[in-house]
Length: 561
Image (cartoon, rainbow, N blue to C red; front, side, top):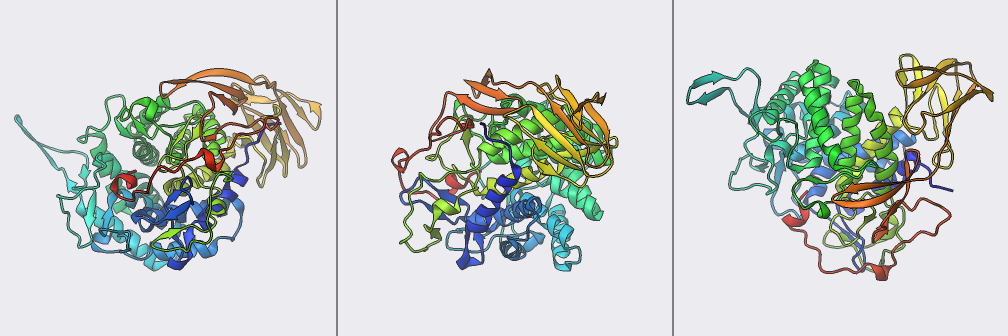
């Protein structure tokens, strides 16, 4: 009756996109820019393809392949790794290659936030890769050497030594010759937070290798952003780029947990709660906070990833209330932001690939991509970044978090946190949501197994092997002791409930079945979201519905993120 939550299918789709939206004539270089509404549709190269994307797509493809348990994609993964290992230069930074569409070769500190996670992945998978280890260590040492270290506070009343490390990058870009040309900048502004997105990867690097330089740089960046930058208010509200702020917060919470710094965790939670106050219950997260008029705001899939990652970090710190957000965000807006239908795309396969532009089979190749800007009820194809290369790299990270944490061990109990069809070594979980309020756990070995309780399944009844059973309920988990092949089942009433919600200063009627949204009013254009009732014909735009309004502009305004 209704569409079901299937992260495995989503992983296959994004795997398809990453392995097909690449340039075979340039060793699998990704295409960031996609224009599905142009007639004919096209994908085009821009500078970010050989900068941020070689890192984020490497991580994204790794995540998708791990979920799928496949080696399909190894060729494309190896190509991304080859690109990733090129173009290292002054100060240990990774620079972009010089291509016809790359006006100025430079490195961006913000982009190192995408490069470093990819290098961490290589470290995990190929621990004997000495070249990768050398590059990663030099990158961290190089960035540490470039920071301005604030050591003394000189005020009218005297000089006071700083007791905590405070590290500020002197610019947001470094030129190819290694110079910090202060007459140049990206124009994005918000340098303290944009430059700080590497925090999570720095903490991960320290975890993996014990690299003290990574820990030192992480603590210095955190200290500056939380202190002298004045980016956040006393209650952790801010004005600006949600993707950067929430990603920074995920690193801050992880750093706090691993160094036992409760203040970091508290401040990271404050950032989460502020962004959550601007978001919908089903996971629509604004790209910016208080920058545009609310009605002009859109949801970048990268922001959903950040909130899922941040919620998970907070859960690891004991804030179990965020399981509900993790569940709702993943099965709703994250899924809706993915391309699953391309019948509206006009292709012309007679046009040859040239000048960094490809026209071939765009309708087929774009399946599985993610939008860079959805409204709560639609994806507008005429908006720049209707499909965004950056989101294609980060969305699989969110999928992997969901996949790895759908079932976790809590106090010796194999706990079903996020219900969908999934097998682990201990359990076979099956879910009938949103058609029925019914979740079953089949034991593959003797174990304790349980169901996490939410407001939508709290009023549940239970059976074990078809017989009524009473669970042990502790810390919000209803559990049973099971023998191999025992089946514990949870059943709870479920019906379609309409709830009004105000998002970006607009009121929507949202139809819920348990944790899943199945419809939303008013419906939007061009691609309507949440048409999940299989009994009702879906609306998809035709090529005539989507009018291309002008030539693509690949300049700085278009590339702004």
